[in-house]
Length: 313
Image (cartoon, rainbow, N blue to C red; front, side, top):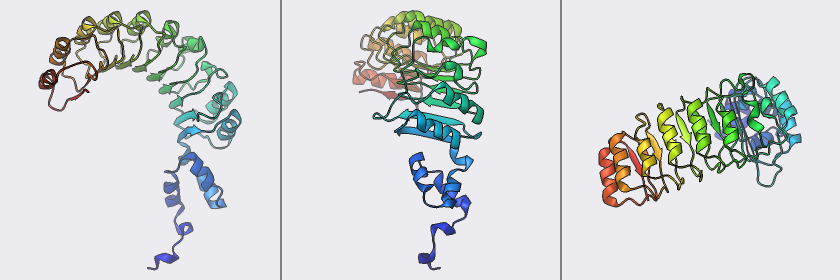
């Protein structure tokens, strides 16, 4: 066979569609300008099932154009992350109202580094299973819509890390979402023990909780976690400088927890960490910058199952 005579246009459209599935949206847009066939293929619904607008130069005008011309009923996952140089106010009530009508099956939504002042929470798709608002500017009382009419009834995962406006009052609103199983509150520095207590008392079926870098959280929060979250599998309390041995002893009472991160908790004693390893068959333990000696680390490994991993300095 003379391969020099082969041309991309000779390929079946199913193969071209498969190749296009590996392109990011910017490259896909450029491919659509090559010829009419490629433009038609680039509009195929299968290519618009998982849409990642990652570090793109966005605006409301561009978002409107995408929602109207490209988004369809196949859309399952949408990530919007404006580039550092583009505007952050790229979503609005009108855009999401139209999105809900053309993509009624959206399950995963990530609004990263976005300014949400033009978007009301009530416009979020009710079909969401996962919602990520990390690093976004969330207006005060933005989550107050959650308690209304069983809003977001399917939501299982919520990430609101590095959101400076999140405080204990917002956690009251989050606590009504009974379907939640995974909650990330990392580096939300306004939350305190009271907010964690409310979450624990209302969301007793949580499986994963991340409160890393919350400076107002201490042993009282861990007591609430131990008392209420009996099914918890993963807990991250790294960089919580006010946690002591008493709090770590509470973690040892969580019999189903398998992933624990206590890195940079410098006030915890070696003996308490060893007791934790002896009490629970952990799969993954992060004790970076906790001051354990090499001998103590070897002892901790001997207490854990064979395939367990200990992360340390």
